[in-house]
Length: 199
Image (tube, rainbow, N blue to C red; front, side, top):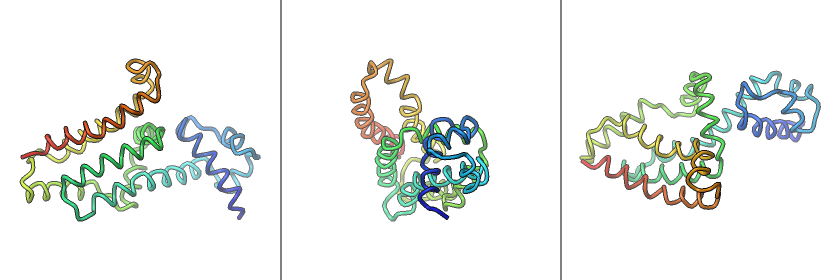
């Protein structure tokens, strides 16, 4: 198997899927992006579904590997939250289309994401239990950990998902100013979350 050809197909598919999702992407469009015949895509990946699964799994694994490492490290619950927020914003800034892509695919087929989470060793219920136990032991807030996690995700994801609108309304389409705003947001979110989990 020609790995160079396969890599070209994968990179083209990644660009198209990130912009258009599974349903919006067309194999001919991916072939054109890769600069090759559509038959080669079917030869290497058999179907659009197989190609999409390969791309989605790779994006998910890379995107959440740091999350997994942080969650299961030996640092305190407070430190985990701080490191998570820093890493998450850095990761999204480097991959701005990923949050919208993942949200779209969750809505399209939530089972795909659930399966990938378990395959990657990320079990939401165990993470909740771990945070609950750490909160109890550290005398942190007794607030349901689900509220904390959903609050963090909402505060982190929304500025990226709504970036075109927010950048246009509040920053006059100034990308540099919005990037600076996102960098400032790391500290804002960390301070808000730390206040939320204080006992």
